[in-house]
Length: 264
Image 1 (cartoon, rainbow, N blue to C red):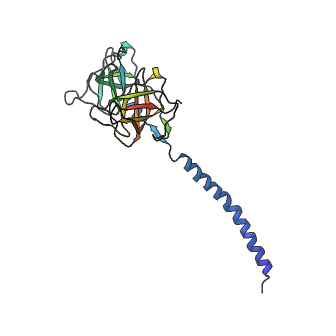
Image 2 (tube, rainbow, N blue to C red):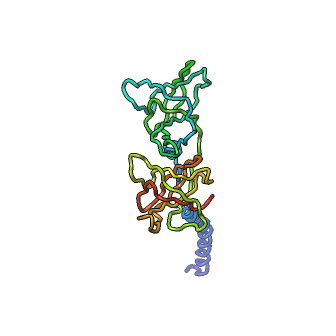
Image 3 (cartoon, rainbow, N blue to C red):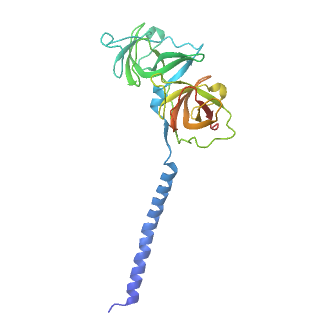
């Protein structure tokens, strides 16, 4: 019969080896779970589409550039142009344009007195051929169809915003910057999460990209306001900003009040 003490020693040794092998793995797994828990509400709040396909306010007194789309290869067959279409520009080699230059195409649509005119970022295009007074460009990325007469601005690479929606249930009692929604997409009378709007807060009020605001409704001017949603600033101009609606329990309409949650 085998020695019970020897058998016990063997089992004890195996148990100790198992602990050495599995405890670090378990600690690593727990650390991964903990990290996942920390970041589970973090996401890309400002995307490429928000930065390059949204609208902004072209404010009164600020002229648009004089570089425009004056024609297109397929202009006799269609009035709107998109990815891979060739377009012709109002300037060329004599005006300093170069092969490979990348431009953002912007179209103006609708005035919002007294602020200015809404400018839609439609697409981006790259110069592929130059004549003295005309350039040919190929549309590389379309967010909205390009039209003859649209304007071209130098394309600036921007960074998005990673973070999390801070919601609309709690308000910073010290937040004093207030404004209102002055524009939503004219195709919609209401707006909701993922869509854009314009508000009357801008650089003059010291707001910046990434700031979050709470949206309020009033059933009547003499009744208390109620928090109904959250939004984030994705573009800032002098007196206006473009915002993206993050979340809400009701649709957003022109005239809704907004209040900055806190300065960053």
